[in-house]
Amino acid sequence: MAKKSKQTAGSPRRPPRPRKARTARAPSQPPAAQGERLQKVLAAAGLGSRRACEELIEAGRVEVDRKMVTRLGTRVDPQRQEIRVDGEPLPQPKRVYYAVNKPPGVVSTHRDPGRRERVIDLVPGDPEGLITIGRLDLGSEGLILVTNDGELANRLTHPRYAVRKTYQVQVAGRPERDTLAALRHGIHLAEGVARVEKATVKSHRKQSTILEMVLTEGRNREIRRMLARLGHKVIRLVRVAVGPVRLGDLPPGAYRPLSRQEVAALRQAARA
Image (cartoon, rainbow, N blue to C red; front, side, top):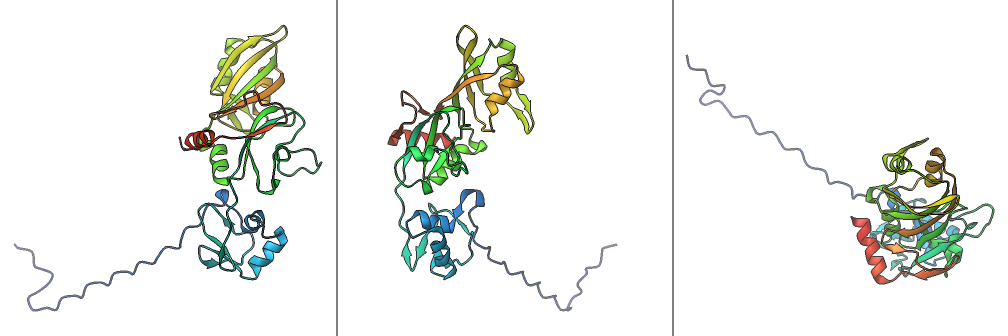
């Protein structure tokens, strides 16, 4: 028997259901990790102290992408977003890129309660907008990059891009092959497993050994802690390269501007 049609002849057809209207998506904001506080960006551009720039924001005189911003703490990316004050575009600071040979005793942090000498004090200009790429602990030395290019700094330090850092490490004793293999395989630290990409013996001295180690991570005192777990105290630690940029014969405490070719190579390394 044939099945009866649900709709008989002459019966009225149901009107089609109205489609739901699509709501426009709100414009995406830059991730907080990639942005800087708006008042800090304004101050770095020379518009006054941090507090004076906060007053500009609260007064409704600042626009980001042609929209007024009055909330303090708003994070922006000055490289990708248009910032205006009283209708005038924010002047873009000239980008600077330096290689610095950090001596022992100089701190890598931007703020130091003890007011010790900082890496950013070793380069010319206002240190307020400068960023150090790749920190070294107080007793370590060697290459640190300094810039005001926040986007490049974020990429070079983010684990996702795995930019290589090369170190020469003088350790007590003579590490055996199994010690070097353990470094490559991974050492358990408090926050997880840490490993090196490469570990080779460069030379031997009477009671110590010079190792070359390549890492793509950046945990606090990572090399010292890994070697201590294997019974080898670090006597001296020098970073000799960050990605394609090498320390060379730059004297301790000195700096040099990076060449255009070096900056381009760093950008390429951070995209790999």
